[in-house]
Length: 108
Image 1 (cartoon, rainbow, N blue to C red):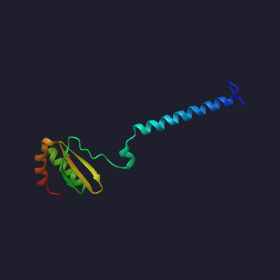
Image 2 (tube, one colour; image 1 turned 90 degrees about the horizontal axis):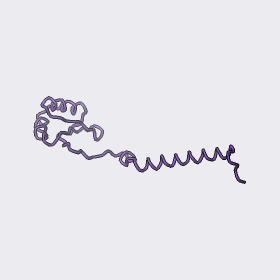
Image 3 (tube, helix red, strand yellow; image 1 turned 30 degrees about the horizontal axis):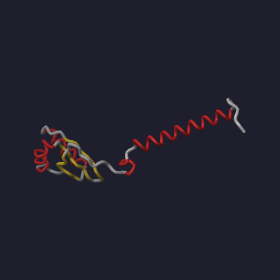
Image 4 (cartoon, rainbow, N blue to C red; image 1 turned 180 degrees about the vertical axis):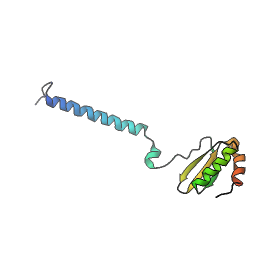
């Protein structure tokens, strides 16, 4: 039973085909450009240019150490790789001086 051009059934069928094609396109693009690490619950471990200088168990301690490094003119950042764990990272050219400051830093 052929459908008449311009009939309501023809219009509904065409709309359904368009929706399915768009849905398929969205799924393919999500698969192609999605991040595997995010899906598997893993975080990237690449530090890039940064070097870890201290690992502490409290967030407040890491932020206080970061403030001390900032006062000394050393740029730093804090990463939280897991629960009850924080790493302070700096650029390699500042790592030796940052480690000295971290060693003399009184942990609260």
